[in-house]
Each structure stands twice: as structure tokens, then as C-alpha cells.
Image (tube, rainbow, N blue to C red; front, side, top):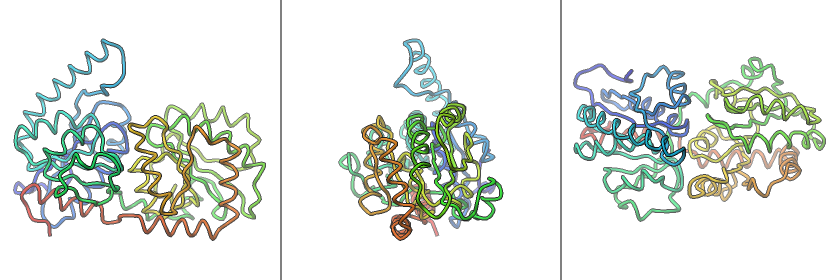
Length: 382
């Protein structure tokens, strides 16, 4: 289903976003901004066929155009053959669809390849967005073919791939409702205490097995080392594949804290509202939400992320005092527990980090990116 105006004179925009919530959530936020840009815009979405992406879109009430495209980097020989067949089919389908649009937006990831290529061949203006400090492979390839490249964070690698006059530092679009949650409502709905020190462990839409394992052991250490006057409690988004594993791991720990966990969290506004500290990976989309909510964080980048981009992302926040950066390979549960307990015992430090996070946030990212898209489509953003 499309988002936006039914006016036949409306600009038509297609957003290619799939793979993970890190691509899809900013796409949904951009679509929301396009409906408020000052002229009629109709938005369609294009994604792959992985269950996690279809679930995210379904939760948002969106029915995207689905291409049978999977990641090209893994799998058996026959699986790769099947993936390439899906890519070819998706490219042909893209050629038949792309002429309907005034502009195409690529949010990064493999799913955007056939649609962006078809748009380039069909001379439909292309706008790219990348949430990270390192341009992804698809965006690097398409950068010189795009009318504009919007960046969520300052580029630390591959800036030469993009003509400087086409680069726009806008931030990453975030659904603004996540800043409007109530701590009291969150406490009631999660059966937690409103006055406790609350850690939000965010494994993302796919979960983060290494982070989950580390945090299960860390909570055991933290329970023994907790010295704050406030009780400790945890909100935990484990990822759908990891919930049972986390529960099993926690059984072996001497826990003295209350834990509310779920495979995924639909009401992220409540999760952020009740949180005093976020512990997560360092994907660009997740960091944009944390910054917009003005929350301090401990970031544990995915060790094998492409070109180590999560480490560079986390480094930006750490240098500005908004986060602590921990390398998963060098961080023991004891070390991490000490860091968390130290922050909990220093409320002034937590407040300082929160203030730094708010300074780094880009609350107008959706509006600014929407204006770039409308201008690329040949319209005038108001």
C-alpha cells in the first residue's frame, strides 16, 4: 500500500528499503515526512522477501512491493544461483515499474540494487541515504549516478566516491513518536518500577547474539556489584531468534534485578521513555533514535560489521561524550558491569552524556531529506 496523497497530480516516490530495521525504519520516517512537506506526495516501498522485513512493514500497516532478493554474500552454490535468479527477476520487474515514479530513494542494502539500477537506466532521479559513517557497497557504487547522497553521520571512509556538491549532511530520519513516550505508562505496561535505574538492552530487529551472551553474564556480575541507592531493572529486546537462549543463559546468573524482555518491541517510545542507559550495537539508525531521545549509551559494535562501520559510528558518539565505546572482544562481563555500576553511581555524568546526545541529534532529518527528494523529483519543497 502507498503512503500519502491520492491526488493524481502528486509526486510519486519509491523508497527501496529492506534487509533490516536499520534500513526500513528511516524509510518509514522519510515517508511520514514526505506527507508533511507542503505538496502532495505518494510513496511506495520496495523490499526483499525476508520474514523480518515483511514483519516490520506489516507492523507499520504498509504493504510493500516485494522482490525475491537475498544477500549475495553467503549460502551454498545452489543458493547463490537461486539468489542471482531472484536478482535478475527483480531487475526486470523494476524496469517495468520504475517509470511510474518521479524519484527513487535508496536506503542502502542489497534490495536497492535492481531498483536503483533500473531507475538509472530509466533516467529517474535517484537519492541515496546512508545512516553510517562508512558508505555501504551499494551506495558507493550508485553515488556518482545519484542526484544527491544524504548522510546520517560524517563520512570517515570513501568520501571520494561522492561528488562533494551532491553530499548533504542531514542525519537519519527517525519516527518522532519515539520521543513522546511516558515513563509512567512504560512502567505500568511492563510491570516495572518508575523510580528504578533502567537499562535498555537493544539487540535490534534481528537480535545480537554476541551482545545478548555478554549482557546475560554481565547482569550476573552487576547484581553483585550494584551500589546505587536506586534498584536496578532491565528492558531487553533480544531478537526473535534469541529469546529462549537469553532466558536459558539468565538461569545460571545470580540475578538481583527485574527484567522485562521481548523478542522485539513495537512501542519503542515506551522502551526509551523508561530508560536511563541504552546498551546496544552501533548501527546508524539505532544511534539516531538514541540521540534523538537524549539518552546516554554504552555501545558495543558488531565485531564483523562491513568495513568495521559500527566502530566508526560509535566513535563519533564517544568523541563527543555521548557514549562509552566497548570492543566486544576485549570487554569482559566484569569490566562492563563496572562501567554500568560506575555510571549509575554518578548521576551528574549520566546527565552530561544525555546532554551531549541531544546536541548530536538531528530532529529535522526527515524533513531535510524529504526536501532533497522533492527537489530531485523536480518539485519545490516549501
